[in-house]
Image (cartoon, rainbow, N blue to C red; front, top):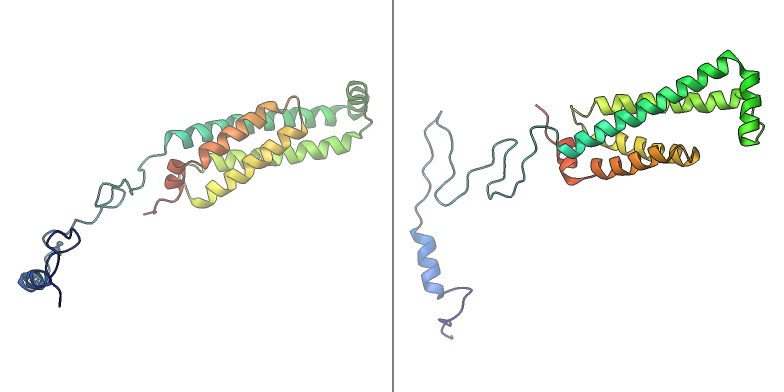
Amino acid sequence: MSLPDQNNPYGGPQGQQQQAQQQQPAQQQQPYGYPQYPGAGQPYPAYPGGAGPYGDGGGYPTSIPGKATAARIMMFISAGLQSLLSLVLLIVIAVDSDSFEDGFEEGSGVDVPAEAVAVIAGIYLVHAILGIVLASLFGRGAGGVRVGSIVWLSFLILFGLVSLPFGIIWVALGIISIVMVANRDSGRWFSRPRQ
């Protein structure tokens, strides 16, 4: 049998380790009705919503983070603009579809029936209403709201690309908002435990 190395940083002699294990006192059980506290040398558990036992910041935010609030505001702005423009377009088509078709053909050089434009404007309006609903649910912060918002913002970018050059506003707001909603702090807000 070889003697243990005294300069070994990973452990001392075997005899000393066994003695240290035997000398630790057994934890006494608390009487009935008293709270159970961790033994000596053990960290206290984290309180709900707070930092972890080692200060790792594993807790959840108690209020909506700034980036999620900024994304929420941008969703309200882009959905509001989209719904306003869609409503104006639908009203113009409803009032005089013939003059709308003539004006659209003169401006774009494409002969499109007013009913097709009305259907597209209706899709944009429904999309805008969904965006307003999702943005209003940010305060609750459920995981489905985050995923739904990312999907909604992806369609906002797509609709913005379809309607360029005016859609550049929606493309910019959509990209910035996706980055903010997909952020780690926003993710912790949306995945926090509920009461």
